Length: 428
Image (tube, rainbow, N blue to C red; front, side):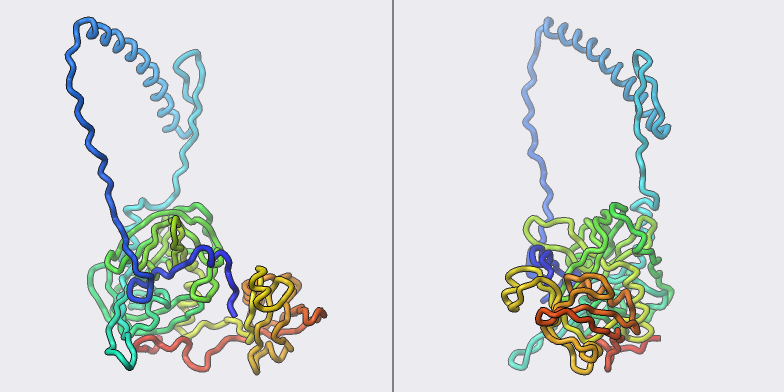
């Protein structure tokens, strides 16, 4: 059972790839331009000679003041151009210190957009809807993707193509190709598709572990399913946000760049045009703006490479434990426990968890000496230890603590993980 995330309950996150039926709630997207009202012209008034003389005197006085101010401003600008030097003052030998303005290194936004544009694609999908009682209908959806290899491998979000019967890819030059399915992973929300094309411009991969809060980025995608190649800019707002989407808890980048339905699967790029993330969600609700999220590129690369080579994600721990995080009084009452923490909901029959002796209702205190309070904590420690390792898990059962030794086994599907939502293709 997945961990309940209070933050997600308060701010509902929505996948954004999914411009189409069932992807986002129906809604209107307003684009308004406010034109200020015209000012009424005041009637001209004719003045006498005395007023004219007064105006001339005032002009002379103001010209002297502005001359002084202009000299001071010029000195300040000269100092700024010298990188924060001290400029001589206008009077009395004083000085005015102007701080140096720091600029983010990298390409201009214009050059950056031109560089990455050929590496971002539009994705459209078709799915059959209906049941045995009504005629089946074709539903359309749209999202984005990035060119992974020059010979036609495309990376997008799994939820963009999930359930589709047909998928097509439109390149930045306007050409379109039907796509086939290579592999997908619902847990990480990454999928790989393939088009029969060569000479494409693959994305340049960055390093999401070196990102810092506040650095400049741009997002490129296909908002509303009909505005392909749209560029929005912003910054990295936060790193390592734990966000729950469709029951899966992901660790994502946060950005304030404008993200809309159809952006999912598109790219988040740094100031040098390197891919640093795949856009997959935004927060929606009243009075919520500037909350977009992306999968870090280091995660994307690991998953995409495995999907292309093996058809599933290797090295992922699966010990057969279903965990439940209880961090509030209402949930504790619902499950009849009197202490917050992470509990074993079930241990799969024949799994390493059952072999280690886990039982439903066990309260997990610590793993390898690290205290835990959520299912995410446990999962992260398992991932850090890696497949093949044995971890020591301290549990509390009916008020008595004991230590269980748990072998971390690999999740290898008996059949191809996440049955292809449309025509399959053997990965090269």
